[in-house]
Length: 271
Length: 271
Image (cartoon, rainbow over all chains, first blue to last red; front, side, top):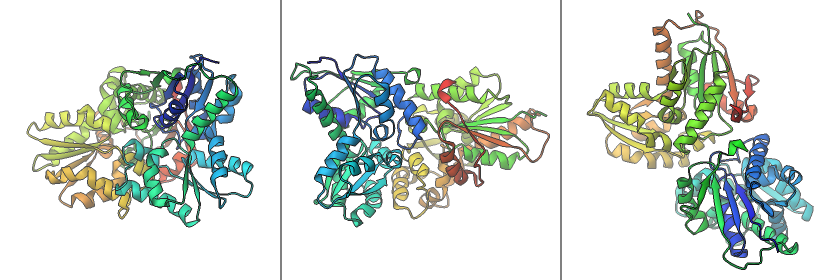
């Protein structure tokens, strides 16, 4: 039994898809969320900048007495995971290994598509972990730099020619190669699930990295006997590095519930 | 005569359109450019975050002995201009007043369209200055939050259905209202000139805020007798807050010349 909260962070809003899944799996746990809305997006930045930002995000979260941290961001998980795990005395889990596990289990043909930010694809982290589980798997990867700004501007609905055109361009090479599994390697992408699924067809299984990360965190806590003794009523506190109002408005889309008045502001450059 | 360099800054790459114009007008001047590529974009952030970032940008530039600073960013010009001008002993010029002047002079019908980032439009700065020059002018404004990410991803060419659809959606209300002048209120937008002009038609005059800002800076220096005594051969130094390589590659599109090897890296959070 461990009553301490779980820390979760992302470059912005995408990680809330992980919070939603954690809440569904572990409704009794307290959660502290940090979204770096003052410096989003991370996915187009260099490795060293991403590591610097991620260290500050963790330093802020650790001002709380946490039992575990979930990196609910594909970019940070692929780029800064090892550094963060080495530097912290509590477990730091990412979304890459759980998503790689799921993809290797799900694929029948061994042809796995992977989409993510430029930094995530450049890192090679998903490919390496998929190959560690299935050396024969073919991973066909594609950076999708416009997905995050399009989602953050509300352009994720079927019938929108802009998102459908961009989805078509990015995913056509993967469809042509006949992948039967597609890893959504960025926590923003679950909002595009319907558009992506319409384009790829019903036979392609989508693996949601953010949800897999939540599942892995829940399993780890259960295995270590570190779950809270409550089975419901856990609280969630949210912190951001830019205006709370802007975050609250968009957060409801990601979470499916209202967070107005529950969001704090952090000067993340100080950490 | 004043041999000191001119400082120019932007949230990222857009301000290079101002550098290009300054270079054309004043080829003998030295220029120091800073692009905050580690924290771009600014246009979707809150007023207080934009002011904090802009103060740090100026603090870095002022480690050089400058004679004048040009804010080559529509968002900072609309949001932090007064604060920066008040806090600095050297002139700090923005792009808003010069663009408002040009628009008020150019319009025949008095119906002026204005496009910019969310922060720029929210500030009301362009409208206020256009009305100060022409109280009868009607300003029809439209935030265009997707233009910066689309331009930075190379999607600015005629024939691209994504940029043409987004341009059409954002500008249709302005076209319907019959504007005869359109202020491109963000220094990224000149790259969209052709697509925008194709949509608006040949009778609508486009006012380029970045170029107007360069022109105003040149006039100010000439008026104060503070130009360099050289008429050619001025140098340009570039600094960014993320990887130099990524900047150098894209900068050539904006500038029309190569900057490889001339770009320095700055930890802007320290200023």
